[in-house]
Amino acid sequence: MRFLIIALATIFSNVHAQTQKDIQARHSRYMERAEVRHLADSATVTANDARPLAQAATALSEEFAWVIDFEDPPYYSKYDLVDDTASQWRAAHPSAKGVTVIAGDTFQTQFPESPNATSSLPGEEHILDKVVSDYNASTNPGRFSVRNEGDGRFAVVGTNVKDKKGRDQAVSPILDTPISIPAETRDANTTIETILHALTVKTQTKVAPFMLPQNALAQSQVTVGGQNIPARVLLLQTLSAAKMKLYWRLYYDRDVKMYGFSLLPLMKANYDASGKRTTGFVR
Amino acid sequence: MVGQPNHWGFDDVGWTTTAVDYYRVQDPAHGAGIPCGLTGYQSMTKSCPSGSVTYTPSFGNKLTATTEQTDVINCRYDMNNSVCQTINY
Image (cartoon, rainbow over all chains, first blue to last red):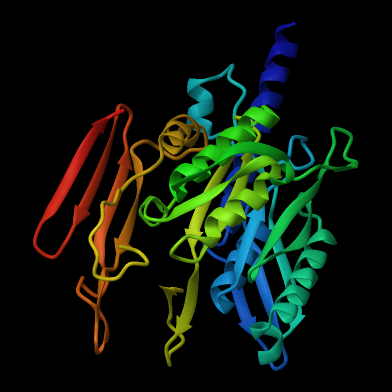
């Protein structure tokens, strides 16, 4: 019996040590931002992150000043999530559930590049379709589609996750949910909070404002509302009145079963003669 | 104000309460300690007949937002002064 306990303890210890090595190795591979390389008549994007497609979308957004929204699907299975519990925290909370992170890793895509392709909306849509198609053919979590949202903006929307048996499962993007809010004139900040609250009530999944440019939004008055209108439409109507170009990131955390909604200002990468990269706001 | 050159308006610095709650609980489990926070830079311009003139330092005014266990500290630094507010939350 004592031998069995020692053997089990040894196995557990080895598994724990291997898990920590895996976590550290994965974190060390993550890139601070995706890299865009321009070749003769094409470009490549290389990303490595828990959400490599979102990272690639941000890189493309900054490279070409494109407005690209991004929405996680609601991942939940071990095929899409990996343990990310820190060893020190685990030692202090031995019986707690721990935390996970989306199991994204490296992703690379290549697309034809020409001035026409990157400066026109059809060209942008074609490139985004190619990027998302390449992602969907990779082993990274989730499957996505590109939506043309009008007004010069596109959304990369999560459409599939893996179920508990590792099979593809279609999901309905949460921002497609019809909601009702009073049609009133409010500042844009309050309007977004009102939309997200109504979405939370309707779906029984918390969708919370996370990082918002409160000053820009508070100074924009909008009249938005109606009955059974997709939350996405109401958000787009609100943002069309904002005084700066903004894109959203809707990230899902399975551990707390919550979406965090962030709005970020559109930035454009600029390179000096030495290749040094800086970014500036797109007005 | 954003979108209204040469007009003054209130502004805020800091995280939403949801983000503060989230990071306090989730960050330590992921191996990121508390306090944690961000530093951002705020560029301010005035609109002149000759064009837009930036009157903050070239890197902007530094803004910080730090989440601690029982409070949140938000600071704004300009060329001459700094001001911080600690919110018990």
